[in-house]
Each structure stands twice: as structure tokens, then as C-alpha cells.
Amino acid sequence: MAKKLWGGRFKKEIDKDFFKFQKSIHYDYKLAEYDIYHSRFHVELLEKANILTNKEATALDNALYGILKQILEGKFKPDLSCEDIHTDIQNRVEKKIGKKAIKLALKLHTLRSRNAQIAFDTKSYCKKKNELICSLLKGLKSSFDHLARINKDIYIPSYTHTQRAQAIPFRDYLGAFTLMFKRDYERIEKFLQDYFIDIGPGTLANSSISDTYQKAIENLVNKHKKMFRDYSYKVMENSLDAISNRDFIIELLSILSILQMHLSRLAEDFILYSTKEFNFFNLPEEFCTGSSLMPHKKNPDFLELVRGYTGRIYGNLISVLTTMKGLPLTYNRDMQLDKEPLFSSVEIIEDELKIMAKFIKKVTIKREVVEKVLEEDRTLYATELADWLVRKHAVSFKQAHDIVGKIIILTEKKGGIEKVKDVELKKFYPELSQSVIKQIMNLKYAKSIKSLNLLGLGMPSGIPLPK
Ligand code: ARG
Image (tube, helix red, strand yellow):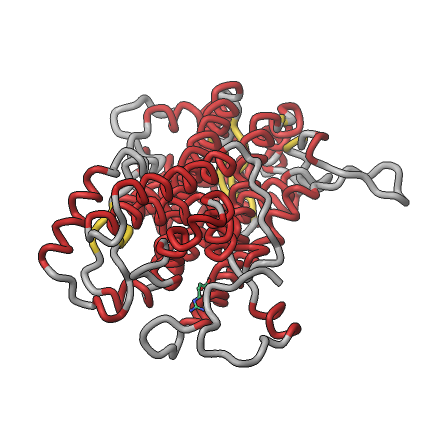
């Protein structure tokens, strides 16, 4: 068991099983980088407060910088015998400073608590990860744009209630997903703009900070803007709130839950449209797996896992919400349990976005299959026929809807609209005939309407109508 950051008032050794039970190093090592930032900042603060001399502050900062370098180079291996990342880093500082200056190393923890460190570290993590998620969302958008560009002339059937509705440009279909993810992007961007990382001593005695102290921290915040990569830092307004607040985790997990819901809907659509029953999309083989039993199978495992992870991501949000419910002010150890759900959601979303961007780029549309459906299923243009009755013959939409509905019943009975005779059509409306149906109920006409239709309602004014 490594050295602990506490223990003065204890006479007995901690129970081994309990020590293991309460450790967090195996996951909070992910916060190492931010923990160092907090310490470097704190060293300067202690120097300003004349608790450290300039020489001492420099020695401590050099030690911290050495550890930071290791972290940034990916060479940092957490010491899993420690209780948490704060302890691990403290031990390393002591080692780097050397036995002779051990007293100096121990001064690092003056006037601060791990409760303040962990709040700072977790907030910094959220900020940094959000930036990464924003850039991954940009990558996904460019994959959608690419797929839309190379298929710009393709139309597909659209659906409501999973029943065929109307023919629509494939790019509009993709555009709907692009907009979902644009909203996610904006939510994250707003989160980034709104959130400040509180900095300050974070001991409860400092719940109201003196003016001089406040000034010193403010100066440091300004000075360190660069080191903290332009994150917005502010002096703790109230240290009770600063160390007990976990709203930012809950907010981020909510944003990620909505983003996950979008990814899951996207996955579901592509799973459905790649089935033999639909057969519209060909999914890239690199992201599918086969069956050990049935040689013909190509399964959409990536999409299924994306859909499946929704349970985990929603669960992570509920887990933190429930942990926080009813906690008395301020910090309570329960709050240690916010880390795993947070890291889990962030890491899953990162992987999903990264892979989805590659996946979408490689999806291919089975043009012949889609075109065949658009040609053979004339009911896809039933709305166009109703629109024609409205515009050409000033029939009310309700009546036009009724007329076309009846024609569809007959079509289904006869097995094709071309089989409905002129006399039958005229019974529904005198101006209807097979020649009108032929002109209107087809993709070419639907496209011409679409291209002139600014409202998207299928009712443009001033275009020539078929007789
Ligand atoms: N490991 C704790 C957490 O993640 C931070 C420090 C706990 N503080 C304490 N006094 N035990 O929330």
C-alpha cells in the first residue's frame, strides 16, 4: 500500500479490503494532466502568499513539470497501489524533489483539499473532451456531406410510421441527420462557452475569500490563460458550491445522451435499410462481421453496438443524477462515483463518432433497387395527385385526399394503378384519366415539383400543370 495523504488522527491501519474498495486510482489517473495544472497553479499561489520562497516554488514547479511532460508524452503509468491520482502525483513530487527536501514537497498540499482538486480536474476534463467531441462531430458532418455529394441525383422513398410516404432526394434524408448532429454541436459549444472552471483554495474555511487573495488568484488566472489553453477560469465565488457542484457532469451526460439517441436512430435506419427486405444500402464490409454458422451472413455489428450502447449512456446519466440526489452539502465520498459514468460516456461517444465518420463515407446506395421501387410503387406519388386536383381543379385538399384514397383502394385490389380503367377513375373525379395519372404519378413529375417547391408542400404556384 502506497503512502496516503491523510492518517494523522488514525491509530489503526486501514482494512485492506476497504482500502481496495475505496480506491479510485484505476480510473482517476485519467485526470493526471489536470491535476498537475492545479498543482502548478497552487504552487504560485503559495508563493504569492509567502508560504513558499521563490526558490522552493521553482523546485516544486520543476518537479511537477517533469511529471506533466511524462503524461503528455504518454509515458505516465499510474501507481495502482495509491489511493487516488492526487496521492500518486504527490508521491512522485516527493520522489523527484528528493529525501533532503521532503519538507518542501509536503508543503504542496498547504491550504488545499483533494475535494477542490477533484472538482477542478473533472471540470477541466469535461472542457477538453468537449472540444474533442466538437471536432469529431465536424468530421461526421463532412462524411455526410461527402455521401450526399456523390449521390446528389439519387431519390429514395421516405417513410412515416415505417410505411412508404413520398419520394425524396437522398441528400435531404442525409440532411436530416446532419441537422440532428448540428444541434448536438451547438449544445456542446454552448456548454463550453458557459462553463467556468472554479479555482481557489477550496477549503471550507475560505468560503468567502479575502480581497487580496481574490486579486492574487485573478492575476494568476489571467497569467495562466495560455497554459490552460484558453479555458475560462474564474475565482471560486463560493467554495462550498465549487466543491459540491456536479451540475456540469450531469449537463454533459445529458448532452451526450441526446447525441447518443441521434446516433442510435441513425444506426437503426441504416440497419433497416440494409436488410434484404429494404435492400437500399450496402454497408461497408470493414464494419460488419460474419456468422460462425451461416456462411452467407454479413451482420451490421457496428450499428448494433451503437444502438446497444444507448442503454449504457442513458444509464450513466441516471447513475450520476441518482448519486447526487439527496447529498448534503458539500463534498461527500459518494461523488467519487461520478467519474466512471462520465469517462464511460465520453469514451463511448468518442469511439462511435470516430468510427461513424469512416463508416458513413463508405456506405453505398443500391441505385437500381431504389429506382425500381420509385418506379414500381406509384402510391409514392399519391400526394402529387391530390396536389394536382387542388391546384388544377380547385378541389379542397380534404376532398382530393378522399378521392386519391379511394383510387388507392382500387389500385391495391387490382394490383397496380395502370389497371384502373378511365371509367372507374372518372367516377371519382371527371377530369381524371390514365393519361393524367401517367403524367403525375411518377418520379420525374415529383422531382419537377420538388425543384420548384420552395415551401416543400408540393404546391408551387405559377408552374405549368399537366392537363
Ligand atoms: N477521490 C475523490 C473523488 O473522486 C476525491 C478526493 C476525495 N476526498 C476525500 N476527502 N476523501 O471524488
